[in-house]
Image (cartoon, rainbow, N blue to C red):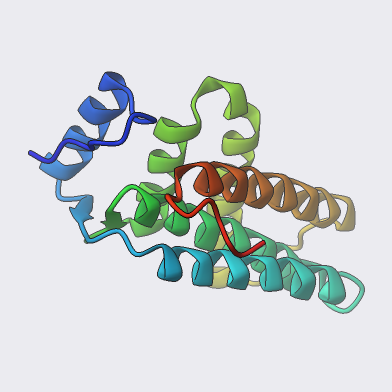
Length: 164
């Protein structure tokens, strides 16, 4: 089993990471903050794209907002030296984000998971509309989660996030 050596990682987090590793859901990788920030920068661009598409296609705007959260969640995982593996990678990213951010962001992470399921429905059953108000809220939730993860990663970065 791999244990994280960073002080920002609690014993409870280590146990949860170990559980995800045992299930084959995550894989240990070398921490590369340049790659982490590339994912975060793309996540911010996804937010802009989602906002721009809101008046054109609210379902696609919703999907892009979700993908911005997914990319940020993957960046969070990489900042701990992990990546999702195998089936259900989107679910794994949500679970990992839950472990790291904890109860303080429970509502936001619950929305992330709901967006994951709804995005899946839209991709595989495109006749299910998403109301404009829900698309607008998804964008707000995505912005909040991306910014929270960005802040968290900046604190973990030994060079203190030279990119913003």
